[in-house]
Each structure stands twice: as structure tokens, then as C-alpha cells.
Length: 391
Image 1: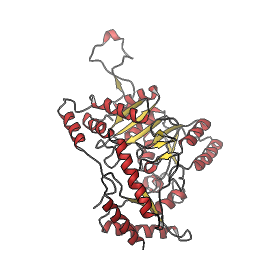
Image 2: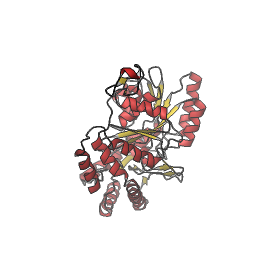
Image 3: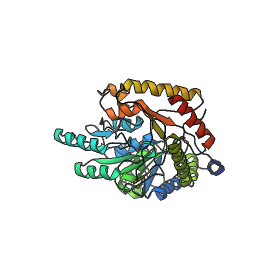
Image 4: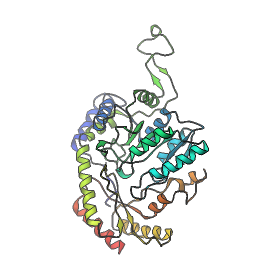
């Protein structure tokens, strides 16, 4: 089976992990700040806080920005459930903004309309979480302008987008957001096995994130005068969590970061080759924008069809093609089932039809394999099989 994604582990990565295992540090040691420094260098962010996974990073980001009971947070339905769950973890109310059919990212027009309605109703969100789907940055300048106008805070869910760029600057520099979150899951561009990070330009937010990462505990004095404590001293200053990344994971991540540029170039070349091979098929290919350099975590096509067909027909056609590809040993996938269709979110009152652009996209979406070790022969086979399935 050709998987839809696969990690790229080299000899240097193996040596880095071996060195960590024999260093005497297995939990949080010197490799963690080294990895955090690599993230800051690659993105231009002032601070990075490495954690167990992107879900915990999103959760911490929401808490650091003060999201809690009585507040509202918005994200998009075209994402993994973690982008919405993190809002619920904080006891806040969740809402969704429909996507732009071209970019599959948060629609700025839909966001602005929803904000204007929320302002009239006195229900503006405290936090908005745009998702850089497939590695393609959202229109962050426009979202940032709306955040200034309506007073919400912005968390970029860049789980797919490390190594990507927007307006010529790296994703993660937080020019238009308060916090950016990355994922280092095994199928992501850079992996730590499991892991995530929250990046920010704000030292006050970074300090909160560090406290939340480690039980809310610090060795800084607040409750007791310094003369009453020694090197053993620690204190819990807030209710935090055990979201710490291990040195083993961080060592792998720091090694992987040395190849980030090469990873992106390879993915770009494979995506461009897909564009050429697929251009004459009845498919909608991923969007290209001059101000965005995608990280190409995913290559997603949409199965063509007449707009006069019933939406269910699109889903039936995609399911047939998906099955044909799997039978041929090609690990196609679908990203994502709209979050508001999930049973948990239906119980909160969301219904099919609430976000039509995301739903139309979902019925047609098919993720093709894309990873750095994908060969041209494998890519040719994928394209040939897809063409036969479409026919």
C-alpha cells in the first residue's frame, strides 16, 4: 500500500535520538529548548513552547488568551476535530465559519458577515482559530484586520503548514495572530513521533504557555519570600497540565528541522508534477495564490461533476473512486468530514446544511499520497489508476 503520508527518518535523526537516550536526559532536558530555538529561527517567532501534541498546544493557547465559560470561540468545519474541541475544553461555546471553496480555508467574507451579525447580537467571539488547510495559509492580513476591528484574539492552527509562507514571510511569525500552533505527528512535514508547539511574539503569553505546560508550576518566588526557600523550592501558580515534550522527541525534531527546507522543496516539486499530470482530468486541483507558499502537507483534489447533480451523487462517485484506489494499493484518504456533522457536535445543535461550502467540498474531496520519498513511478501509477477510476 502506498500511504497518503509517511515520515522521512534519516541516519542523522536516528543518531540524534540515540544521543538523547544515552545523554541522561529522557524527559525535559537540553534538547527541548534546542528544538524550540530551531522553531523560532525557522519562523521568526520570539518564543516557542514545545508540547505533547498540537491538540494540547491549541488547548493551552485558548487558555493563555483567557477563553473560558461564557466566552465564544470560532473555527472552521473543514478541519480535524481538535481545532474545535480545544474551545470546548475551556468551557466556552463553539461556532464555525464556512470555508472559501477555492482555498478550502476560512472564508474572510463569511467571517466578516458572521462577525457583523454577532456584534448586533452581542455575541462576538473571544478567539478565532483559522486553519491553514493542507499547508496553504489563510488570508491572515484580512483576518488580522478583522481582529482589530472586532476585538477577538487569533490562534493560527498551522498544524499542516510548518515551512510554508504568507506574503513572503514564514508561517509562524505571528504577524497577524497572537499564537501559532504546529503539529509534529508522524505524517506531518516535520515529526517528533508525537508532538506540537505554540509560538508567539509575546513574552507574557509565552510565560503563561510554559506554566500551563508543566502543571502551572514554576521555581519563581511569589507566595514565599526568597529567604524562606532554597533550591528545592517550587510553587503552583495556576492550574496547569502535564503537556511536556520529552528530550527524545525534541532531539528528533531538532534533527528534522535541519532538513525543513529540503522537505518543502521536494513536496513542492511533487505537487507541481501532480498539477501537470492531472490537469486534463475532471478534477478541481489545489488552489495556487501568489502571496502563499504552501507547505504541501496534503494534496487534495475534488472529483468533478455537474453542479446540477444531487450532492449525494458526488459522495457516491467519490466513494466509488476511493474504493477503486484502495483496491489498487493506493492509500487515498479524505480530509475532512465536517466537524459539525460529528455526533457530539450534532448534540450541540449543529446540522447538515449549516455550512454548505465545507459540505460540498467534503463530498468531492480525495487526498492523494504525498510524502518526500514518493517516487515518480509511484506517482505515475497513482495518476494512471485515478484516471481509470474516473473513466
